[in-house]
Image 1 (spheres, rainbow, N blue to C red):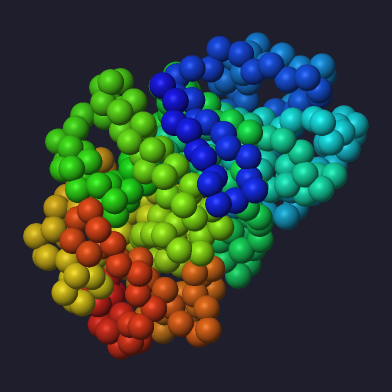
Image 2 (cartoon, one colour):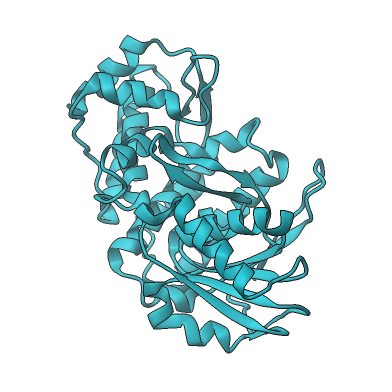
Length: 347
């Protein structure tokens, strides 16, 4: 199964997302697999046996969002220089979204750019983070504020790597699937309401649908100047939650689940979303054991943190909201008091 990404209006190279088709990766030059300690223990030998390269190296980094920073990027780059990788070399991102984002960023700046391939090992990375070329790291001011748009050469999504995924990690990935369905595909959302994603056939179909949605959006808007911003539904709130909890308390998908519910509350108050639709979305998140009720400690501080969001500009906060299920609204004209009043149910 394959989903193609074609950039009609950009100079970026087209590429494909392959689902359960990874038999062998053949490379002409040197290669380095970038992964973390957790994935390395379980799957590193598996992927090494599938890569054919002139020379093959590995860089193992610490596991966790708290290590998604410039210090880790410097460590990766130093290892690549030690291996004497050249501009014809390829990096292979083998892990979740953190590994993929950092590997892509390192590839974009190592000797001014080398190829990289995504082999995501989490559901969240397969359906979202590995597709579209967003790369980067966090800093003290917020999430992914340092980075670049840099497309991979290919993406390989293998269900076998999800078999060892902890249930909590798996469910965190489902949050991103629900996000895309609510924004772009009403029938997909209603299918998810009742779908058993423990079934391999259903899971593969959910991955395919999600990748296809994202591929279509990215092909239209590679650099997030328009419709691609819609993929950040729930993320404006989620990034604040992650920053407030030092990226340690919640998985990214769990923060997104909180953010979706917050965005829905605002949409209901603006008349964009019916209450019963918001309830359906929250119940679907809860069906996959996702948390939905974050408690805001300081409303003023929480609101002010929105201004660090990359979608905000000219002192305006951009909110991505559902306009009923299957459609979206992009709003940068919502008054501060309306936002704060909508969030009171979380304080």
